[in-house]
Amino acid sequence: MRRDLTSPADGEMTIADIGAGTGKLTIELAGLGLPVVAVEPDGNMRTELIDRTNGLDNVTVVAGTADHTGLPVRSVDVITVAQALHWFDPGTFAAECRRIARNGRYLLVSLYNVTSFDSAMRNERRDGHGDVITGSIRHFEDTKTAFFHNPEIRSFANPMHYTRESWRAYMDSHSHSPLPDDPDYAAYRTWVDELFNQRAMDGALTDDTTCMVASELVVCGE
Figure (cartoon, rainbow, N blue to C red):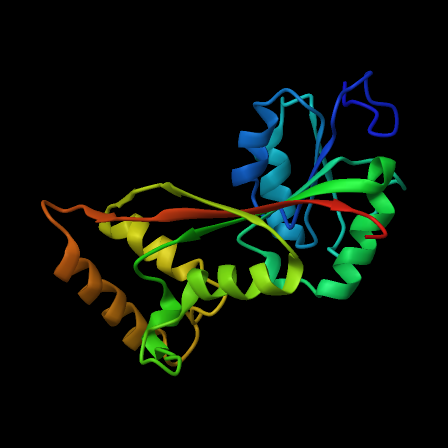
């Protein structure tokens, strides 16, 4: 039986994973044993999310957006966003967080896996110092400024290992990657394969991914 989010056990925190996608973070959060509600607007992703969390009694999946989660007023204590905060509007998201926060405060946690490569690097953007600022690290830095006031920043080594096929799937998964029916897709796939050929050893590519985490306890009204 799913837990009633409006009536948690005494002292029990409720986590809202917003923009949950297919549930990669949701499943890890469920391991804490606390009630987790996963909010995802995309129907296809939500279907996979439901399939992947089937059997996890402490997970509830709902259709909703960052601006309109559909969650009850004053129902959550922790709000997590993985690899998605750059899609949200700071003002309307903050308003929704205040609405669903219990006891006038919530812990906001944003996570980004910062990789050596993603498809945004095909069109490098440089800052005034000539450094490449692109992909997830740019999203992390931009959202840290836009959504937090005084965040605690942590980083964790999270090396990722790819075969050629899983590398292709990973690179194709980015929102800015061309789709297979795009006229540019053949050239893009050639670039993706060239990266694999340059970096792989014995048929496997290891990327020194770092998980960047920003967190802050937000007290509503301050």
